[in-house]
Image (cartoon, one colour):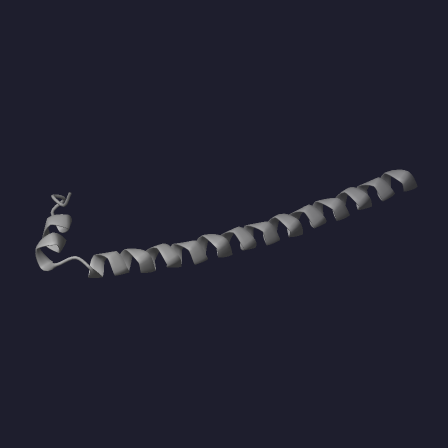
Length: 67
């Protein structure tokens, strides 16, 4: 049978583990938001750059011959 001190230690460790899980989950959410925001900006910039190409440049790019 576990002593009172052992139970307290287990409870503290369990609470700490739950806290770490919540913190890491929040960090992942924050990083995903940053990544998604940056991806949207890069896609918009790429779309703008592609819109500036004329038809022959687009064909060259599509065939891997654009320099």
